Length: 146
Image (cartoon, rainbow, N blue to C red; front, side, top):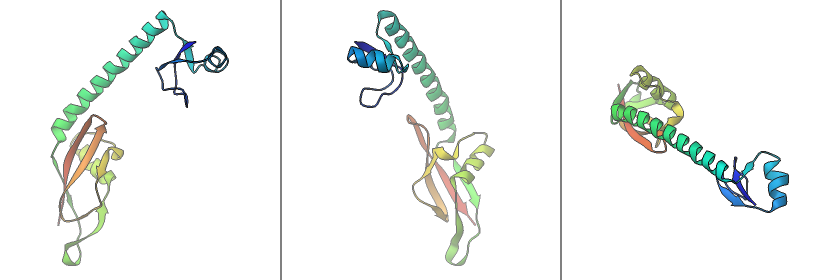
């Protein structure tokens, strides 16, 4: 029996996979629990249409995020910090603070998308990775100044 999976099924496949299973497993588990639908020409056409729609949405999202990337890539985000002896910074700059500064520039970037390599706790320029999407990554410069 051929089944199109509607959800990920551990040990069998991922969503949208077409798998062969025994009749009992297919009817009594996958179909009954709405984890899959019976493979037919009609269901295959519906699956192809859904995949195309999802791909178009994904492409549009990547396009929009790429425009943001072009405007923010290698942009300097400046912070005035307090320093102690030997120009040591008190504390460090968090992803939340970077996100708030980027928001002031007119871009709403979640702090979870900002991925510094290490703590930003010394004067100077630090390159920080911003990952908006698995296909859209870029660096911004975080500058700490007295």
